[in-house]
Image (cartoon, rainbow, N blue to C red):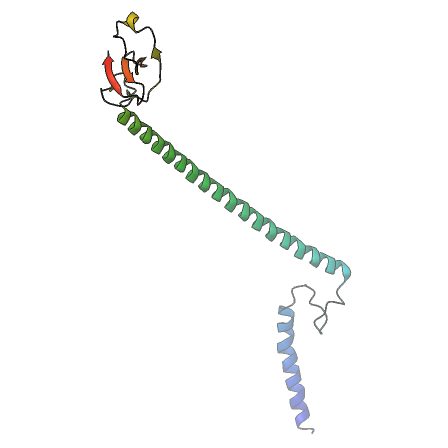
Length: 170
């Protein structure tokens, strides 16, 4: 045994010389708890500080998540508003085209000031009945006819049953 004792002593000495600097290199001043993995021997002030740090980090993550959610909602609302406005413009264009088509079909004058009324077309414009037809040098309408004055100042003789234009005076 006397021969192996110096060998064991040298190995222990060498191990301590190599392991001690490595152990001190890992020491960053933070408490790691006891050797069984628990933190029961950590001072209470340090436990409270660690808990406060965890709660602060969680609060910051929650705030960032809420900010991202609000940004996403704002972006979606803007997108939906743009879609709604585009849809509204499309609907207005459709309504205008339909109204223009009905005016053309009915012979209603366009906004340009000249008339497109023709005999045989149906009149769907405003009804300003002319009762004193002789004052405007118009012929007397028959029993089922009447004269109307258009917005353009024209006089149309209409059939009372179906509002067909029978005659017009400019």
